[in-house]
Amino acid sequence: MTNLLVGKSIKGFPIFVLLFFTSLNIQAQRSEIGFGLGGLSYTGDLVRYYRLTDNRPAGVIYYRTNLSRVVSLRYSGTLGMLQGKDDRPFDVLALNRNAEFSIFIVEPAITFEYHFLDYKSKNSAVRFSPYFFGGAGMMVFFGQEESPENYSNFQPVIPFGAGIKYILNPKWSLNLEFGARKTFFDYIDNISEGNIIDKNYQYGNKFDKDAYYYVGISLSYSFYSVFCPFDFY
Image 1 (cartoon, helix red, strand yellow):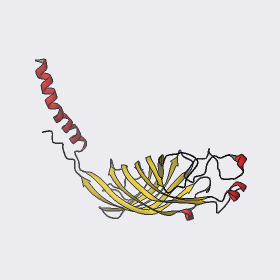
Image 2: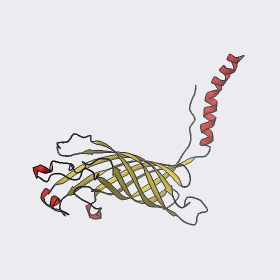
Image 3: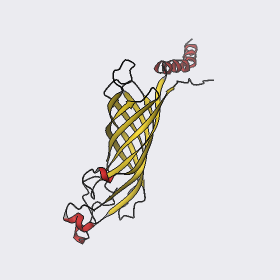
Image 4: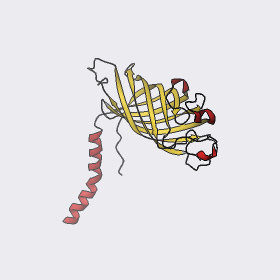
């Protein structure tokens, strides 16, 4: 009898799983695909403060699934150029160093978005909402000059920032966004710790990690993703 009950339970388990996931997806879920253009800039040993004029061409593509009216999950890929140089020296070290760099980066990331207004509701009086986002990503960079230090071209980053979304019509929306990327890395600019006794000035502050930023505008297209049950047979 016990074996019979266990057998029935095992046989019925796929049906239970199917019903469980079907209940989570009982309604069609609106998703979005989008692309955007903008700029990337960096701060570190060569550039201390964010400057809009330092932005270099960049782009982003993404897929967004809306978990609720105010929370979304976004998978994105950002790519573009990062550059910096000691063209505006802020101390004697920078004046004598006269360093510069230029690299190409690719950044896959996963972020959560929280919208402050329920702008997607049919009864909403507004067609826009500011939002905040945060998550995790990976910076992959190319074109760096040789360095005496050994490091990986794959570095984890924490993307976070804010933006505003505006619904153009039921299918299309416009997004304006600014985001920062916190890194745990000090060699984006190929400048970090060094032997200060050599007096060659080709070093920086190893305790001041580099960061980079993306600002851009994007267009997204909405569609409904319908849950498709698994074929258990």
